[in-house]
Image 1 (cartoon, rainbow, N blue to C red):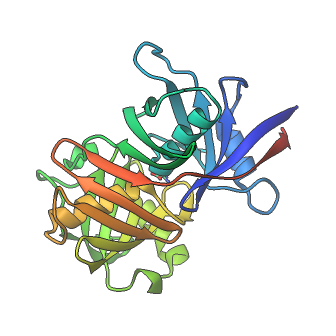
Image 2 (cartoon, rainbow, N blue to C red; image 1 turned 60 degrees about the vertical axis):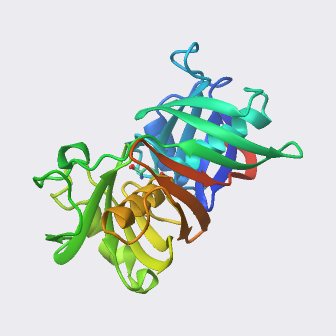
Length: 282
Ligand SMILES: N[C@@H](CCC[C@H](N)C(=O)O)C(=O)O
């Protein structure tokens, strides 16, 4: 059986998208593992299903995302911008404010359309959760901010944030000097994080400007992570490095995102792009 796919990326965080308004995908976990392989298949950081909403009166579409190891993520910031662009370009919605159901709640997307093209997508990513049990991280207290502990076999100051999925933020002088392939798995699988964790390695590089790399649970190093950029901005504000309520420029391997952290919600703005489309035998 052949499946039509669209490969899209949000600043280099690339997923294989399936239009599930038309096609039913069985066993997405297994498909994610198979198709994400960059040597023997399409290649990507995982797969994303664009589905009809569970509650059509309340949302326009639903998204499910699967990491390259087949695990399902609750939320994906870069993918949801691509989903917004896909829905608009394929006539599945004809408006620029779109509601998309995810495993971590319904998110509101605002599309900036210039000459018929989606130039950028702003997403209300919901409230950042800092309570340890919401991450989850096996530490106690109201929040874990700049807390010194052993993780991945070494002592680090960690800041933990949930953006629907778990994030652990480390401030470091030289994110690009780190051997993430070597140290990433130690963070991801540390018993401090019972559901594993995404880890951001972040440096303050200007006023309200951060430079980061990310090691994602289930996919390894990716060129960008939308929820990770939000977590980095939240952590920077909580550690007194950036301003709450201001636009924070987050520079990732594949490009830039603008993040704004408020008490009620975190807002993420960035691009979404097509790479190619095709058919794959499954
Ligand atoms: N790349 C994503 C996050 C994908 C999910 C993550 N690896 C998880 O399992 O928590 C983003 O852009 O937010």
